[in-house]
Image (cartoon, rainbow, N blue to C red; front, top):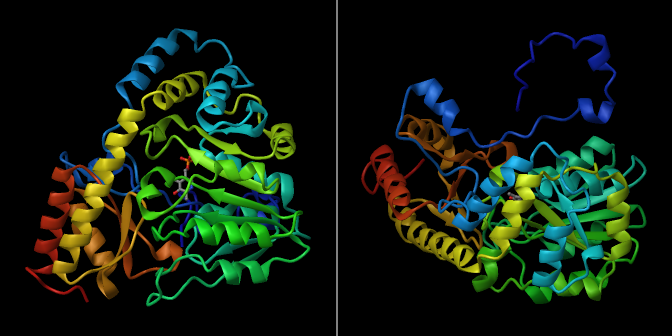
Amino acid sequence: MAVAKHDTGQAPTPAAAMATAAVRSLSPYAPGKPLSELQRELGLTDIIKLASNENPLGPSPRAVAAMQAALPDVWLYPDGSGHELKTALSRALQVSPAQITLGNGSNDLLVLLAEAFLTPEMSSVYSQYAFAYYHLVSRATGAQERVARALPLDSAMPLGHDLDAMRELIDASTRLVFIANPNNPTGSWAPEARVRAFLRSVPAGTLVVLDEAYFEFARSSGCEDAVPWVHEHPNLVVLRTFSKAYGLAGMRVGYAVSHPDVADVLNRIRPAFNVGHVSMAGAVAALADAAHVAAGVTLALEGREFFNAELPKLGLHVVPSAANFVLVRFGANAMQVFDALLRAGIIVRPMHGYGLPEYLRISCGTPEQNTRLVRALGAILGKGGRAS
Ligand SMILES: *Cc1c(COP(=O)(O)O)cnc(C)c1O
């Protein structure tokens, strides 16, 4: 569905046609529409973006100051070992620096994991409606992909990961299992006891990649910090990011916590300077400002409550979420609603790429932004009107 800008419908130039079959079969990831693009297209100025689950509070002022202070040094290559950030993380997480691998966002770590562990003979396992990168990074290696059907809409965890079904797909060829907890784009989550039982059941030679990009928003929903579990499970990799709760999506910093042997493998293929100097300085300072993170989480949870209360009044079904966004069912006219919202200066995220064409994903913004979205939807759908 996502067509590259250069796609002319003609055969690619011979050199490009020589890319591996696996890579040629990929569609590029379709990110949320950037503010500047909508500005250019519609000439609008007062635009809000509720499309990429960013933190509307922005980064900690301490992180901004640290990044500014780091600027004069950018002529030097960054510290390739990420010593300062790893030391800060190791203190905060109670793990050794040797258990941490830094990434250019946690997506970078997904790429490294796939490169290190997948071949066309191997398989990866993930859930239907799971974060799109699990497919992308697996597919690029030519590995077999095994996709477990998601839990049904009328279950206790609508569209969530069915860990039992995922377990059944694991065999001796399975090198990576991806679990997003909570998951994007569904917002669904798996409680601690379930994830723990799953980990105990997985063979020692299969890595479980537990992607906790939204972990900070999910504690009140019963998601536990999985980092301490790496001490019991040498085949567990926990992924975290500074892009969401820490408000540093533009800086591209993520990390993996794993057994040191797994970190050692990742470090062999990690480009030495994959995280920039300014980014690491910002992350260190952001990590130290727990109050700022807490404020962002509170704001997001209030936004989620507001959407949970207001959107059903418009006849919309909101999928239960433990993250800083909600997946909302609009029915057959979801794309018309998406376009109408764009014209109203509000960017949300279409979901057809995820096989959820009747849905839009809406990130929690500031109270003003959330109210503006609900008002705009009310106007688009007709007062109290039903979608579809
Ligand atoms: C946003 C997100 C990430 C984080 O990506 P970064 O590369 O760290 O910005 C990872 N996993 C999921 C499920 C996400 O939604």
